[in-house]
Length: 261
Image 1 (cartoon, one colour):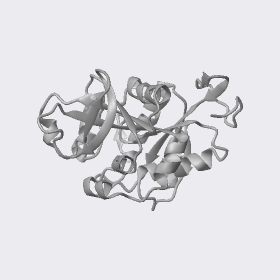
Image 2: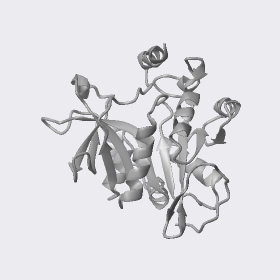
Image 3: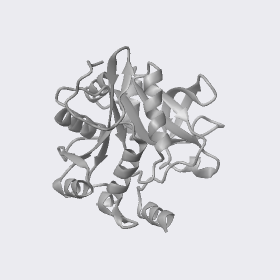
Image 4: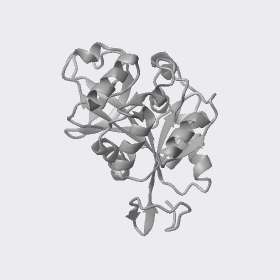
């Protein structure tokens, strides 16, 4: 934890603990070269680019400063035109979390932030409650990382695009994530829909990006498994709500546009 001084002035709230500031930085990784839906971050959603919608949703949660980690000037220009801040990162970085780490160390070289939220850029309408809950978990537990899920109440658990966490519950809606899979796990249910938001302790993020890609991470194509395979802990809270719209395909983009119409 850091003393009560910081480089970046902000109107955002900072949490105080035993005389120290504990503050949060929200970083949204965004790249033009998306594999399944190229240039989706710049796609029009109700008159605004998708990434601007996500940026505005993150700012509205009011948990900390918000920046975009982007792979080129095109996205940076769009965010700056919307009044936001963007940090350019290497387009060849292997994952969104690596892009988040790169943006953090550039934006905050003295590392004055205690918590770093990695919010996926393809969640244009994510609720304030989701962002606030991820921040709350990490502050009130000793987990290295926090994340979220929602109950699955239909047959979407059969889709491999829906990532399912296996949770060891410690209370009704909270617990420790044991595994994540694109398969329907655990056998027999109940099934949960993982929401793409992670809150890292600063030291946890440093450790994570220093680890090599793991076997299960490569198998499932889910980078959070790297943390679990290396003994890092992930706290997870289940929010009884519909999962936020995630724009991964052309059909998802149409759904997002319909949501605003």
